[in-house]
Image 1 (cartoon, helix red, strand yellow):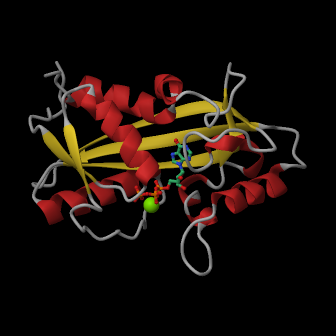
Image 2 (image 1 turned 90 degrees about the horizontal axis):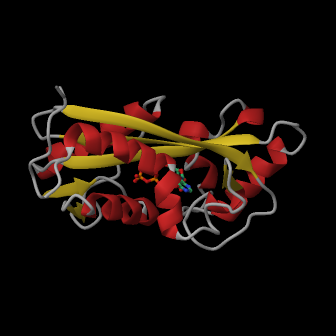
Image 3 (image 1 turned 60 degrees about the vertical axis):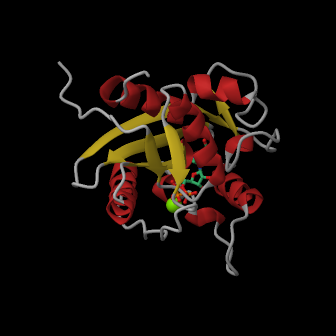
Length: 205
Ligand SMILES: O=P(O)(O)OP(=O)(O)OP(=O)(O)OC[C@H]1O[C@@H](n2cnc3c(O)ncnc32)[C@H](O)[C@@H]1O
Ligand SMILES: [Mg+2]
């Protein structure tokens, strides 16, 4: 018997300010009849991500949104890891794209990864996604998924977001950014974490 708390609400707050992540999680939740309202739409603040793990940061973001909104919240903390860099940028993936004047530059962030990793022989890379549901009473349910592959250079493709153009998942010839979104959804780190979350906490309606 499952010991996970079930989601009975039809709407959850998506505790993310990243449009790409909001879009992908909204599509995954829609299959279960769950609709979302984003943290941005509610004007919720962006909490500081002070934890050292994906699950830690996702928990912090989900709890902050659940407490501020009084609704169940789903947070997504994710990142890109390169074997030759011992897993960096990892939990700092978003920071590597941060510009001195504000805003993010993912082309620059990908170039930085390539510059640091190009001399290594190991081209291994992976994405990780931690999804955490938090209730206003402080209860949380967390799940983590990974997608292994290699980093490629130059970046290829226009779809997706973030570091997608430089990641080619294992067994595929296209990068995440060259794939149809439905194909990324079939195999991504986010889809894997979501499958576990769905198994534990969601009911089809
Ligand atoms: O914290 P929130 O508000 O949710 O939004 P964020 O963009 O700051 O998200 P994270 O702190 O989790 O940082 C994740 C980073 O990893 C990148 N990332 C996550 N999932 C990705 C994916 O599926 N494809 C490409 N890049 C991804 C993303 O663009 C960010 O730079
Ligand atoms: Mg963030």
